[in-house]
Amino acid sequence: MAGLLTFGLFCAGCSTGGTGTRDEGPAATQPVARATPSTTVPTGTAKPAARVDAVPLLKADPEVSGRIRNDLKPCAGDEYPVDTSYGTLTDGPAADVVVNVMTCGDSVGVGTYVYRERTDGSYENVFAAEMPAVYGTIDRGDLVVTTQVYGSKDAVAYPSGEDVITYRWAATRFTETDRVHNDFNRALGSGEGDLPAPTRPQN
Image 1: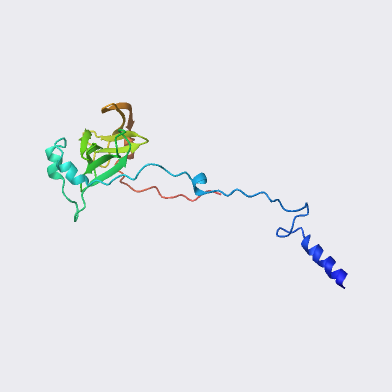
Image 2: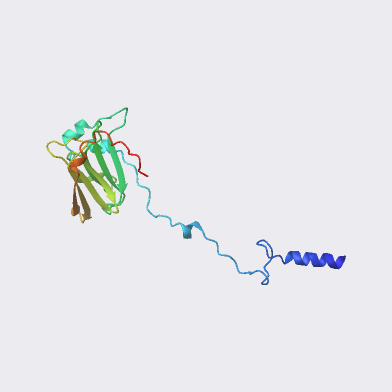
């Protein structure tokens, strides 16, 4: 009986299942390299951008037209119609600030501004575009400004087209590097009217 028991234990140790010992010989003693987050998920080195209260910045800026400064009021409560973006545009000491001012009623952009932080922590206006339906964004280090183009009979919600202009910082100012014009399909009208009724497929 002792011999049979010993033989049974030996065979159990030689199981070819996924959790038993390997038939090819002793397990490898080589250490297994473990992945760490620093090697599998690269971490950025950029510091978080300091947030800026854009409203007092705009109201104190003489480069902003008096009309926009006077009309800049909360839409509801203390919410101003202002969008703010942060990113690298001018290679300055900190993140640049792109500010878009819109109307309260229909959210149409009326002004786009770029502010660059000085070494003393104050901000200077290095770009301004004031016109109906303008909006600026940061795209991989470039400033992209989109303006809607309206015909004499166009409604605000349905412009005839748009200009997309790309600017790049060069030395001390932005220079235009690309311009794209898109004409919109006028056959779409104002979006009014009923959709055609669905038809039953023919077998």
